[in-house]
Every structure is written in C-alpha cells, then in structure tokens.
Length: 226
Image 1 (cartoon, rainbow, N blue to C red):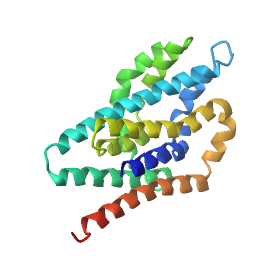
Image 2 (cartoon, helix red, strand yellow; image 1 turned 45 degrees about the horizontal axis):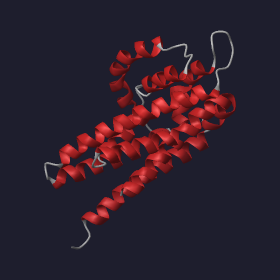
Image 3 (cartoon, rainbow, N blue to C red; image 1 turned 90 degrees about the horizontal axis):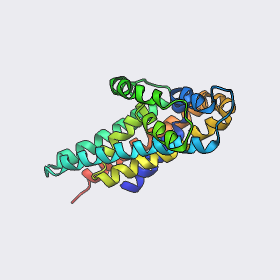
Image 4 (cartoon, rainbow, N blue to C red; image 1 turned 90 degrees about the vertical axis):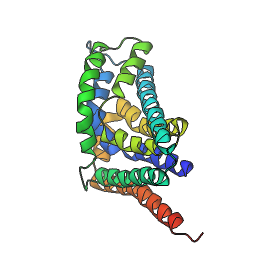
C-alpha cells in the first residue's frame, strides 16, 4: 500500500494549500521582503523550502523507525492499529481542510512548546543574506507546529520503516511546494482562490476520501476468506 500512501501524502500537501496560506503566509511574507524594501532572489525561496522539506524527511524517518520498532514486537494488532490510526487521522485531516472540524489543531497546540524552543534560533537567522543561511532558516521553519504535518507523520509512523516514513514526508513536502513557492510570487492572487469555500470542500473531501479508501481496504482484507 506504500504507493497509495505516497499519493495520498502528495495530494495532502498539494490540496492542503488552503491551510498553508493561513499557517505559513506570514513567514513567506517575511522571506519575500528585505528591510530596505528590495525583493530577495527567488533562489533563496528554493533554499528555504529545501530546508523545510529536509526537516520533514528527517521527521518521517524517525517516525518510520519508531513504527518499525513497534512492529518488531511481532504482534499483528500493533501493525493493524497503526494502519487504522493513520487512516482515521487522514479522514480527520480532510474534514479539517474542508472546514468541518478543528480536530487536527490539537497537534498544533501540542507542538507549540517545541516551536518556542526553535523560534529564537529561527529569528537569529533573519534577515537572510546567503543560501546556507536560507537553508538553515528553512530547516527551522520545518519545526513550525502544523496540524497538517503532524497528521501525515502519523502515516509515516505506520509506514513500516525509516525509509518508507522518509519517503512519505518527502512526498508530502513536494506536494506543498506549488503553494508555498507560488505564495512567494503570487501571494495576492493565490490567497483569494484558496480561501473559496468550494475549493476548501473539494480539497478536504478528496484527502478524507483517501483515508476512507484505506479503511475500506483494511476491512476487505481483514474479512476476506482465507
């Protein structure tokens, strides 16, 4: 099911642009203007996002390794439980993106304490003047508490290995690039579109659909005749 999960993670990142506009818009705006009013070169935005996605991949590898260690117990209920949790969280994530609940914000509140430790380092890197500095700022940005990121991390936990967990978060990170890079260039044009109710509904229900399909697959395989 890893190919299916990779596609779900990619689409969660892509369709989650509804959330990204509100969550990361301020950071992108800070990266888009210098104190003297000039616009930084676009290559710095590439470096910011490369650093951010690198942090996601590291998180995914750690989550996948943790999930693999749990599965090494040899207990089938552990494996099924992780997969079931991942699909339920994917459904809740989709419903959040569609505007039907706020459940995933629990993750953001839980991650707030961690971000308070990273934020001073992030602020010391501003204003950014070089590509290495932009890469480090992007890696710090990746620690921003985000319910979207944390929800996909649950799928990385159920992925079965550090490699698969890293691949899931890489797919998710790549899915976020069009929105966040687009915001750096066309923020005023993109934001009104992404905030339309119909766009939010379609994006969220599509993501939730992947979780529902995963649950249906689990039910079909669990109750199939031997």
